[in-house]
Length: 199
Image 1 (tube, helix red, strand yellow):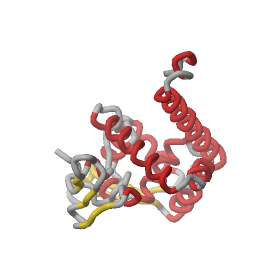
Image 2: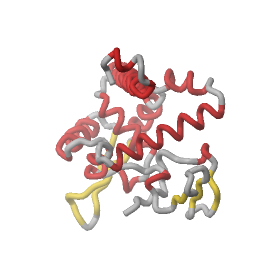
Image 3: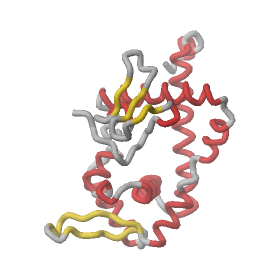
Image 4: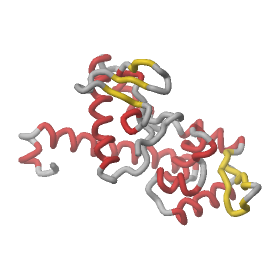
């Protein structure tokens, strides 16, 4: 896909090269935030994740799966964030080794500020025609579903991998059994708090 001779004759390769450029842009923007706030990119990602997700997902084991990192790496990152007073550990009353992670007031402020790191990527997407946005979303959902099923991405909380989700045979109509309603393309979720993984 990165062979220019092939890339210039295959739209699939151009799309892959484009996605790689966008991934690079995410890394650059995240790194810029990390320099501004004297945090590492993974520290910023953890703060943002903890801020926007349910407390039951804010455990070391879940975060390790979410970010495809070892538990030791997550634990070390949590330790540093605790030292900086961005997070606090809430220990389980029945198991002193088990804890969930909660943001402090200071941590919430940083999470809110840094969560705008993707703003420059949002701007051109907002300018797209509604139909182009829908087609882009459907294409990206299919890519993510494939990466999940092939084991490249471990955790997913999107409609396509949820036990509540149903679609018509041609994939044109979408339905949520939890909400008991049809879903438009705009309703399809990448990250749903009620997600139940297909088994």
